[in-house]
Length: 362
Image 1 (cartoon, rainbow, N blue to C red):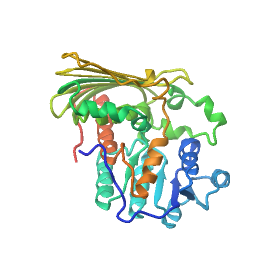
Image 2 (cartoon, one colour):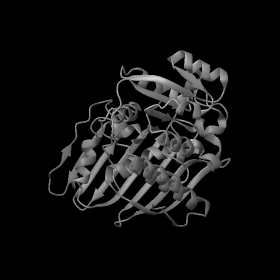
Image 3 (cartoon, one colour):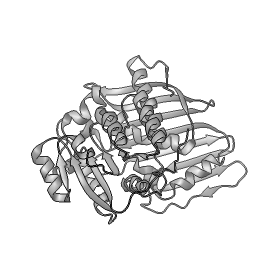
Image 4 (tube, rainbow, N blue to C red):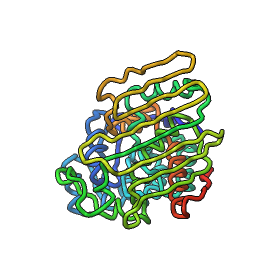
């Protein structure tokens, strides 16, 4: 599985790159669109979302050339880059249509809810020579590629165990009708059903654990085969996850997560990677990566304070750069699909009392 892909169009487009948004909701308006708008080589061409008033608000504010509540109208204008930030259950339809229109695609996580659909998107993009980028911003933070390369080069020897824990300030997203306080000052407030419908990917696993699962797979190169898990749920939505994952080469991974921090605090994201040669501590909320080796060849990666504070600009720049025939995709479709497969198995295991569930393989 190729987890870092250099992808470019056969014929790189000319500047400016025409960009379109499908699903201009609260996060797209807060992060993705401003990042695109700040690039002089990007033209904000088309925008799509439901609600005529909301659509006009985002069109006028950012200066899109065209707006429609029908995503097919936006794709008919042949954008070179499409950002899909619609509700989880719509990602497959919207991404597949954007790829069919010849666009490089940035897809919000999770990539899909169905692993087979996720791998179908990955295959379609790869065969078309188009970039399929997942909006997992952690991968693009400075210094993480060096940590990853060290692990892939055997910094801890053969990996035997990974502990991956993610706790974020998102309880109000997945429970109740109050929502996050910052939504009151953002462009849009998402509908409760977007994040709290368990039949359409509501809950912490798809909404947040998708960050740490993707990061764990990308950093280690491991391939999950089976999952045993339990969730803590309220009204059908999982707020906490605990899973044991068996990998292809025998390594075991402990995945856990919870929507528990008070709003405004930096998410706690920590990994311990252990192997035959030593241990790697990776603490993103503490800007810290330290290697402890049995042979004494220890290493501190020297991450500066604030260097790993989360933002999602990296994936946006990556998809535009791919349209321009350059750039590296640190969150390719293969990682997005593998992540969906793990989470789908986690959810299935929890529903059947924690029994072992096979991870979908393409």
